[in-house]
Length: 128
Image 1 (cartoon, rainbow, N blue to C red):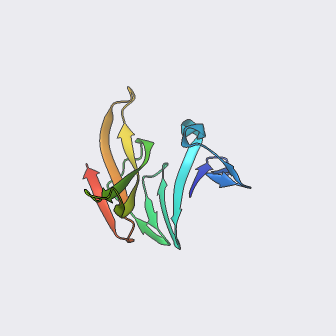
Image 2 (tube, helix red, strand yellow):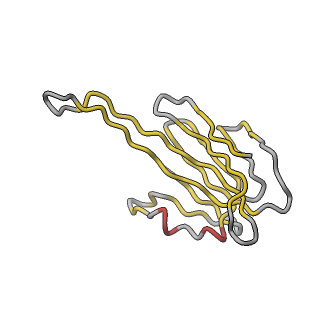
């Protein structure tokens, strides 16, 4: 479940009192941070300084004080299906959260994405 944290410290949750909020409802230009709760783990990205968080551990990459960070978030569902019986043999979800820096013309320059796998392992997609 994701949580969007705005610059005024207000929050928007994916699920709030049984009501689902769509990702496209996030006001990207007002966003300060984005967090994803998977099981007991919290993964996050701070869009004012580019810092990542994995539970209480900060993770830093090369930053620029003048950079404008744009949120990246998506998930990939994978299913292995038996050829003879069409039964699902294995299913997994990989969550991707991160940022890309953009120029004044909104052209991407750098990108860092944390990949969170179903088994709890984390990978990185980095273009600096």
